[in-house]
Every structure is written in structure tokens, then in C-alpha cells.
Length: 31
Length: 232
Image 1: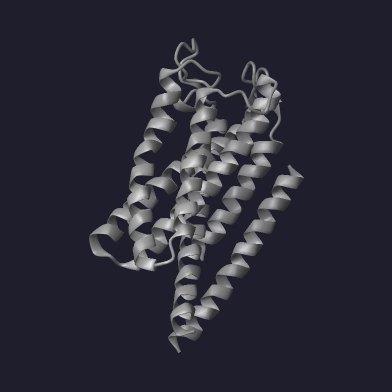
Image 2: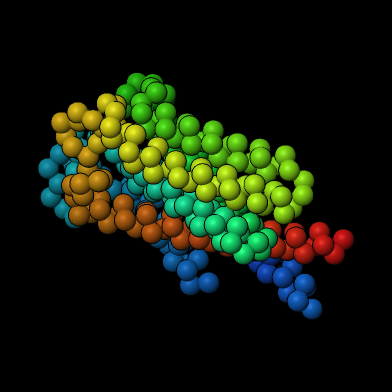
């Protein structure tokens, strides 16, 4: 359970960081 | 933002309860999962295997819808969506194959048995593997979009046959195969106990939210890439 949970939380944090990075790039394009 | 937080809580809860709740032959308390004869502890993988297989179908059909939109309107934004959905469908298809292989090893004794459902998912992986080969082989954007859209529609037409029809008309190891005395199995016939059902449907919702988030993220990334490509 702990291994699966660690993999999931790793993916979740990665997606969150990617999401905010893409948001920054989109804002740069709009400027 | 709210959807992302709901997804985080929901999938974490599915993992904790799906793996953590004890199993009992005669469940008394709400938190005890019933033992399914022949599956025992292995039944827990149902919370992850079925949603990944289901999402691959959803993703391939989404890819087909956007492929049709591209062929009608010739807008490359639809091609980006179509290929993003196909990519995620391929990824979920691989996850369904891997979780199924682990389940098969402990239930049927071998990772791969060429059961009709295993064969059909293998053929689907080949079909969509060819989709990405096709995309990488054509350099002109419009030509690539048109060819891969046509291919995506034809490929998606085969999905219901390989996922829903073929495994049911042939004899096999999966529940629901032809001649299976137990019928379509606990998932299709909704025979799971209420607590298992809650975890199972929460997992379906969580995986669907995950697909939606990954899909929009992939589309947005591709749009930024396309913008930078045009600029540079």
C-alpha cells in the first residue's frame, strides 16, 4: 500500500508542478 | 483547482481503503471487505485494473470524436486533442495490461495466458502503437493530422469489438467469457458488497478526473509547443 501511495503522490505532485509551469508559459504568451 | 483537490483526496482514499481494509469470510463491521472465493486478497486489484481498462476505452473514443471534428473543420487544435487522447488511452491500456498481468500471475499462475481479453488488449496496443508510428512518419502537419484522424476513427471502431464483444463470444479465463457458469462476474453484475462498490466507483470517478486533468494538461502543453514552434 505504501509503495502505491508513494507512486501516486509522486505523480500528483509532478502534475501539479507541470500544471503551474504550463500556466506561467501561457501567461507569458498572452503578454 | 477544486477538482484537483477532490482527485487527490479521492484517489488517496481509494488506495488507503482498497489496500488497507481487512478482508473477512463473514464481514460484520462496515469496514470489512468480503472474501470473494477464488480471489481472496487478490480481489483488491479490481479497484485499479478495471478503471484503467475502462479509461483506455473512454480515451480511444474521445480520440475518435476529435478526429471526426478535425476532418470536418480542418482545425489543428482538434488534431492536438485527438492525439493527446490517443496517447493517454495507450498509457491506460498499458497500465491495464500490467495490472492484469500481475493479477493473472497470482490467480491463474502465469503473467500471460493468451486469454481472449488479453489477446484483444494486445491487439489494441498494436493498433494504437501503429497510430503513433504513422504520426511520426509524416512530416507535413496537415497531412499527418488528416491521415492520423482517419486512422483514429477506424481504430476506435475496433475498440468495442475487442473490449466488449470478442471476450464474450469466446471461452476464456476472465469473468463473462462464453460458458462461464458464474456469469459476467462481480463487477458487471454489480454483485460487490456495498463497501467494495463505494471504493470501486470512487476509483472510477478518481481515474476519470485524473484522465481529464492529464488530457487538458497535455493539450495545453501541445498548444504552448505549437505556439513556440510557429514563433521560433
